[in-house]
Picture 1 (cartoon, rainbow, N blue to C red):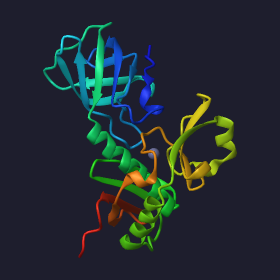
Picture 2: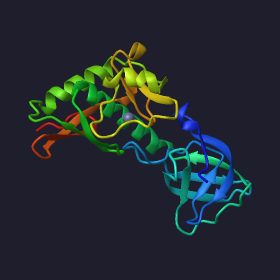
Picture 3: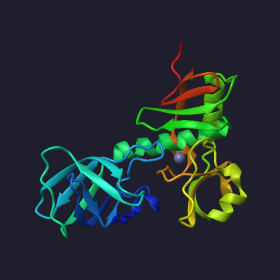
Amino acid sequence: MAHRTEALFRDDAYQKTAEAEVVAINDRGGILLDRTIFYATSGGQPGDIGMFERTDGGRIAIAATITGETKDEIIHVPAPEQALPAVGERLKLLIDWERRHLLMRMHSACHLLTVVCPFPITGAAVAEDDSRVDFDIPDAGFSKEDVTARLMELVRADHPIFTRLITDEELAANPGLVKSKNVRPPVGTGKIRLVCIGDNGAIDSQPCGGTHVKSTGEVGEIHIGKIEKKGRENRRFRIRFGPMPAN
Ligand SMILES: [Zn+2]
């Protein structure tokens, strides 16, 4: 039976350490805990890496975090050659915060891009230094410079970013909230998590389980590195940190 891990990062994306208890080791050596701050790969955002500290001071390096049988079952994958903890053992969890914060800034930047380019999303991948969002647009008609300028307007305005839970019925009544062309948020659990930007979500609200910064200003300086043509009706936008390089 799938285990249900309490996902602390859903309520507080800024928690860098926590204590947890080992509830199981799976047949591949993956570590399951009662609760975790480690985000598990999903929705285009890679899972966390980091460290578990044992009470004797020993350390277990975590190389990946993934979901198991269900999205609520979180599996921490140790790096090779790590000693495994015992079931019932208490551990101190430490995520690689520097990397996670870059991913949070990038994930929020991807949402800002969907505000500037309000077209159906066909794919997305968040990474530490180069993220991409694919849109279903026959002709881009966008320049890197214009999109960058509009993104930076949203960053400089320092709009709040927050999460809100809605019911399946509220989502059904507001189909426009779903921006993905092919991926539907899971319904049937009763609650859907929205990531909202701006006062009362005035700038944007969309279903997302990822971790985000708390205001658009925290995204920092970003630019569109490239707009690529991927098929007749697909354009891939690449977001990078820092100012747009001079030609
Ligand atoms: Zn998202």
